[in-house]
Image (cartoon, rainbow, N blue to C red; front, side):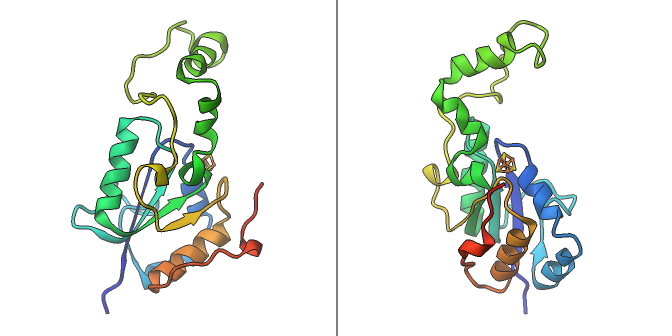
Amino acid sequence: MTKPKISSDWMAGCAGCHMSLLDIDERIVQVAELADLRATPITDLKEPDASGVDVGILEGGINNTANEEVAHRMRKRSKILVALGDCAVFGGVPALRNFCGIQEALQRAYIDAESVDESGKIPSDPELATMTKVRALSEVVPVDVFVPGCPPDADVIFYVLAELAQGRKPELKDELLHWH
Ligand code: SF4
């Protein structure tokens, strides 16, 4: 039987959700027996398969056009799309800037704060923030499975991966969800 393919990628956030994925430790062997892990934190592949995957996992909010492209690409290539972590589920930490506006957030980060950048200028890198608001993944593309948490527990990620690898839709019961 052909194993389902799983790929992951990230957008705006801290990559902590992918670190939590690594925290499933040796249980990754069980997942690898059930699924073909393509571009994930445990492989060297950085790009999700152009040929498509059964499960695409995205971490992070949508902060700029590059993030938006990642979201559309993964949606197009995945039969099932998973929003991993609070940033993907509802905008999370990056979306805190929505409360004060992009210019004020950049001013606070790059001009007012002492520790971030000593140039005294707001960088012009378009990757930084090209959208007035950070959006959740589901505001840009349809999402099939939501996995909240900042980051989600490794136990939750293992459960979700194992269920998806066996062709089942995971049901996240209250006892599996923890907020730190
Ligand atoms: Fe980082 Fe939390 Fe966002 Fe995951 S949900 S990317 S751990 S800030």
